[in-house]
Length: 621
Image 1 (cartoon, rainbow, N blue to C red):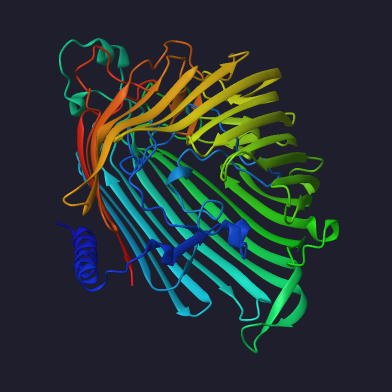
Image 2 (cartoon, rainbow, N blue to C red):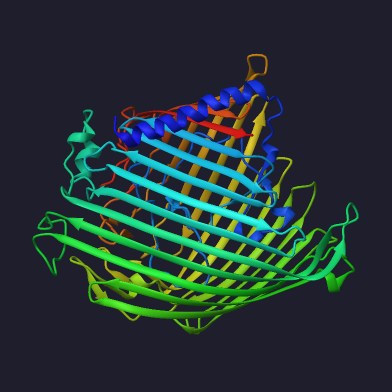
């Protein structure tokens, strides 16, 4: 056992032992003691929510859209909306699901120290360890540490990978609620071998006998990829308004009517691709070195942001206190370094939002717009609007949303230089017109939604993995049904997505995607344990799935074969005893029981039947 493994094991066993003592001594453990919020909802009490301690989908701890297994790049089979903003973007990071970053991270408000440990061990030496530690050194100051480590060898040759992620968050609000801040700092590191996929997936699919996946030939024998990412955010809030004396004490409290927020951000990323044997026929071209490939791309963003925003002052005297307004200005300095590229790019953005601070008829709305003043996205425009109304019983609502964006392509589409690809393009702005609607019935735990978008000047990678632009419009429709149906002790959790692409020349999506679980749930051992036993399934109809390029880290077109039409079935047992949750899972239960091997993306089959054990333990003391 390596020293690193020993350290992880000792840490986990220590908190496991401490947890047994805590459970024995404290009968009042309550997950209400730990509440979380996001960066955009600081000081908004309505946005606080307790940490999730349910068993629903607990066993599904990673995306089933990863090509080949956990830790590998994700190819979304459902059309998703990237952030519609005008900030500088280098590329779509298909491994971003594994990263800590400020848009997705949550901040903590805890009355006592809070810890959350999650450990998974599985076939092919898979080990995942996540930890969260939240502590309040002062009454109104919180500090939280998050870390995650994943390692796996995978089922096929050269699928070994290691992920290391570390994040520090902090939030503070002064005693009189006049000043507050958020701090976020993270380091994300991925090191993975690249096998370029198996050489012949036709043989793999059509083989009548069981195949040892570790003996299947792969395309690349000496390639690897590393991503190192650093992220920092410091956001300060200065609340403006009247100072009132608290009714319960002699303390003064800020009755804010507006807030000024100042943000400083830094983001950088280093991507390295190496191949000790690039003469393989896998590559279409070799431009610089036929002996060894070493490609490096480095980019960073240094940004400042200032925003003034009206907030709910609590008076609620009609329109004048209901009307919300926010104005913000952002300035970025962006740098990109690559073969034959060393450039600085500025970018300045002006934004405006209108919204209601409170509602007397349970109607909420927001209108917003951003404009590229100069630099990278000069002349770019994003307009969006949303209205939401609570209907029927509490928690049910109808929501309508729409928007338009006109933005510059990600940098990778314009310029890219490596040992195997190079291009220098001048593409038109991509435009997206979108509208959507959603209705949710809380009584039936059912949601219905639709999205329609029309994309002009679509950016894509052609069948040789080269960046291109489609001169025309493509219309995409998406409809979703999500529900949680209960009948006695039986439960069905499901999401069914239907998609229609009017012109599939450059955008390829499956028509139907199904993700669901059917399970039996009951309290056992005199209600000391909550138990779930069931099956989960991920399925999509067949379509011309995109290939993956390890050089660029992007997905590109292919017209040779359709992939899909295969259910990925898991058997799971979930259990919960107070703050401890455990799952035992047989993943890909139907491996070898069906004639077709499962290949979600060309040359990248999913792994075989795998056995996994996961434990989550939370401490509130």
